[in-house]
Length: 208
Image 1: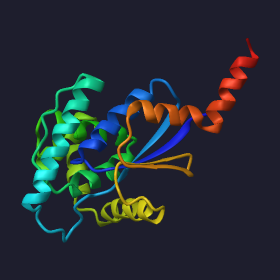
Image 2: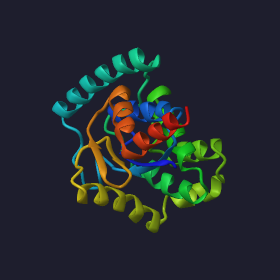
Image 3: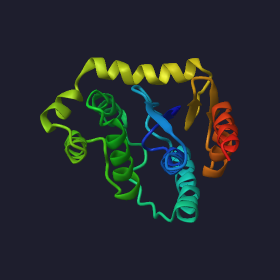
């Protein structure tokens, strides 16, 4: 049976990108049913990033770049700091209806972190949508769909109602929560400790 994993992320969060890489790697080892959830770091009405917050973002990016290279063999080329991520989050909601949310989410993350693209422009989002098999016109119209906008906001409200106010935030099987940056090895050990994984291991041992 697949392990449900709800993952709240934002596209400009470097540790969210690292966690995304870890989850993709873990999906080759465990039967994960991943649900990518929206958590916009800078919601509407946020002030522009201060010099202090930009300096902190630069520091986090340097740390993430080292880990990406050492843990995954990937060189980061990130997009602009302080980018408004509302539109790509809305597009993820649209992609869900076509079963393309995983593909769009991954492509948008890669575009921002590996190709230095500003994924806040409707045209760029449409190109990514087409890249993963979505209709360009429908993808464009989705960006102004209020229902999809409310759905992405609801994702963040749900995370906060569960006491998860920082990202990345992970919820396993609706009740096992992890908030904050976690390494691949830490997450792997955590998944192995889940009751259903222990039961699977015991069943497998019984067949030897």
